Amino acid sequence: MMADSQSRQVVVSAQLLLLLLLGSCMVHEIEAVEYASQRVNDLETVVPPYLDSFGAPSAQVKVYYRTNSTVGKLKLGKLYDRNQTQAAPHVVIKGDAVQKNDFYTLLTVDPDARSPTNFTARNILHWMVTNIPGNIKSSQAITDVGDVIQPYAGPAPPIGTHRYIFLLFSQGYKKIEVPAPTSRALFSVRNFTTTYQLGWPLGGTLFRASFDDQ
Ligand SMILES: *[C@@H]1O[C@H](CO)[C@@H](O)[C@H](O)[C@H]1NC(C)=O
Ligand SMILES: *[C@@H]1O[C@H](CO)[C@@H](O)[C@H](O)[C@H]1NC(C)=O
Ligand SMILES: *[C@@H]1O[C@H](CO)[C@@H](O)[C@H](O)[C@H]1NC(C)=O
Ligand SMILES: *[C@@H]1O[C@H](CO)[C@@H](O)[C@H](O)[C@H]1NC(C)=O
Image (tube, rainbow, N blue to C red; front, side, top):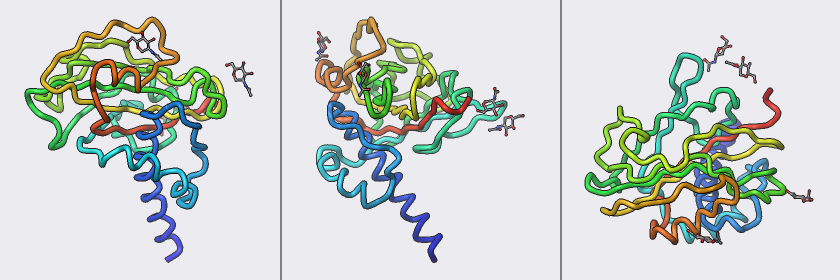
């Protein structure tokens, strides 16, 4: 009974957390959310302002890292060893919102740089792939069919535990030309989505990695 309600809370927390994090990434100048406070009560006080501005995810972003010799689907919010997430993952995008004739952008950002409590470098851009065609097959690599604007970089958090957030945006039917950023640091998701008229993310996922794991 106890365990049951606790595990339900964990599931609810994870869902709220995704929405919260997607929201906080869009309005990424807001205060960092203390990730450790996964208690539902805490989340309830933090989530509402951002839930309002972010609709339900309408596309799934499935991320697969090759760990040792096996390929595993990323579990939302899970803490991964840095050494298991250094190579670019395979990404599958799916869902009613993914249209065959449209193009998509995938971003991976770390909002917790340099540290979760002093995020002066927010965001670090870990990956940017634009012009991913909506008719991509799940076996195809986004980097083969899209344009890699910023190559994947694995987590290297200098302090604490950081979040690595994958966000998928629709470009509509247009291809976009994005110059390669001169730096990974101080990447503004909001400025980027405004500049290229990408709107809210269609979906996303995230994992965590810690300085302390090796
Ligand atoms: C990876 O390999 C190590 C050593 O062989 C093993 O202990 C560990 O459980 C493996 N991890 C996964 C995710 O398979
Ligand atoms: C936050 O980081 C900046 C530089 O990244 C540093 O100058 C500042 O002292 C730090 N603040 C705290 C409270 O650690
Ligand atoms: C937003 O992006 C444009 C170029 O895309 C850049 O010139 C401008 O400095 C950026 N603004 C901020 C606040 O990052
Ligand atoms: C990855 O790091 C973990 C501990 O952080 C260690 O147990 C494991 O052996 C490492 N795996 C590889 C392939 O280096």
